[in-house]
Image 1 (cartoon, rainbow, N blue to C red):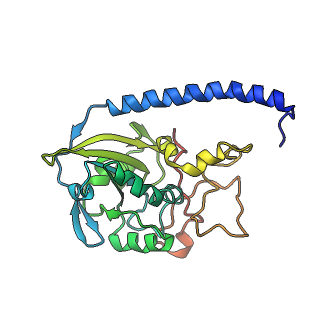
Image 2: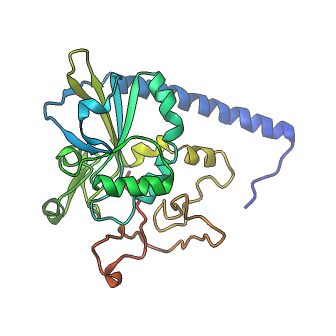
Image 3: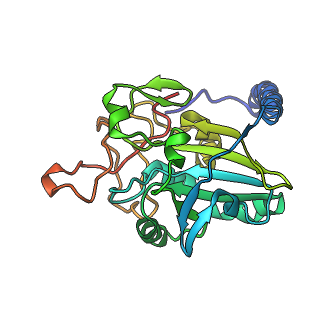
Length: 269
C-alpha cells in the first residue's frame, strides 16, 4: 500500500484540514462524556456476593475505600480452558491504570463466572495484578446481561447491548460502573458492551494512527488476529478466512473441542 506522495507544504495543508475534524471529534466526545455523567442512577437492592482470593466479598467490599467502582465483565466461563483473547487484550491495559484510578476515588475489579481457582490460575499465567473475583455463585452476570443460561440461548435471541440478538456463546464482555454514597447505598450508573468497549483498548488507538490502521477489513471477524500476549511468537499468522470459534471447554473430549479460543468484542455494533 502507498498513499499519494506530496510535498511537505501539501502534507501540512492536508494535516491541518484533518486536525479540524479531530478537534470536532474531541468536542463531540467531551459532550457525550458529559451526557454520560448526567444519566440517572438505579439503586442496587440485591446483595451480591463474590468469591475472592481470601474468601467471600460483597459488591460493597469491591469499592474498598473509594466511592466509585468500575467492573470489567471478563469472559471466562466456568468450564473454559482459558480467558477470552479479546478480553485479555483489554486486560493487558488494566494494571498500569490502577494507581491512577485509585488517585481519582475509583476502584476497579474484573468479574467472571469461572471459579476463583480457575481465575487465579489464568491470572498467574498472564502475569496480571488487578483485582478479579468470581460471580459463580451469584446472579450478578445474568442481572447485568453478560452471561446467558442455556434456557435463554434456546429461545433464539438474548438481551445484550440493550437489544435482542443472536450470540454464539454464554459469556459476553462488558463494563459497568457503580457509585457508593456515604450511607453505603450503591447505585448502578453506567454499563457498556460490544463496540462500547473499544475506547478501553489502547493498542487499537495506537494502531489508528498508523497507515494500516487496525488492518481488520479482510478478516472473517474483526478480532481474529488477537492472541493472548504469551501466544505471539515467530510462527504467528492470521487466517483471514477462519470463522469465529467458541472457546474450548475443559469438559469436552479432544475431538469435540473447538479449534480456537478466540472471542470477539466488536462483532456486534
